[in-house]
Length: 262
Image 1 (cartoon, rainbow, N blue to C red):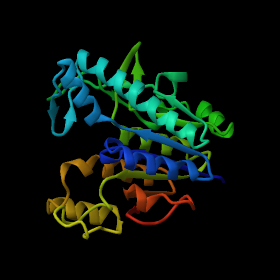
Image 2: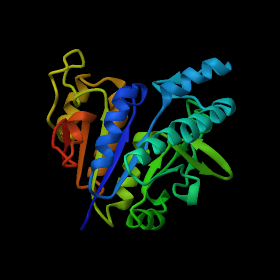
Image 3: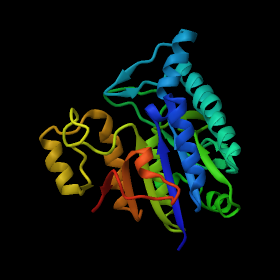
Image 4: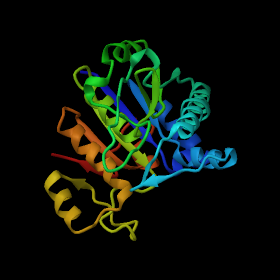
């Protein structure tokens, strides 16, 4: 079975032009089918301030009201997505920018109102993915680049990029030997957030839950970890979390950062 790399970038990788250029060059060099998923929250927040749209968060998650939905659709699906696609084309990487609405690739359900009304936010599962169309694109040597947007009932929905990456990896694991990589500014999952050299090289569910009880993890890494364990338990071959220059090289894959295991 052929390898497939599903790679998510966000954080300082997107915000720093030099880091992004370095990452995209390495990404383009991977000689295997690949999918890229990007965030862009800080860019949306900055542009929102210029447009008079205030960003509101609860427990680190953006509240997506109607003006914010317009904002993230423009920034994620337009500005950030097309800039990435253009730069990949410069590296002779035939990328295509996508949201979940394009080709009905990821159909979501609007999150129900609970204790918090998150607004126009989409929840997805592996069954949400049009894996047949994605498989066809990959077989045509087209590189999908996903913005963190899905759709339901004629509306775009803001959707967590880590979740999109995990769900895509799971859905395509029936067609490929799938590797899921979460790239961000840290060298891996840290046992102590104040010490950059405290990278946990391997993390399984039991050790994760033990460290979680001790309060070892900051809020930002928790969605990545939950999505990582969901993927590894659902047929994805390997999951890595760490800094992009340590995870992607000209050889296409290096086992650095934090390896998630069962």
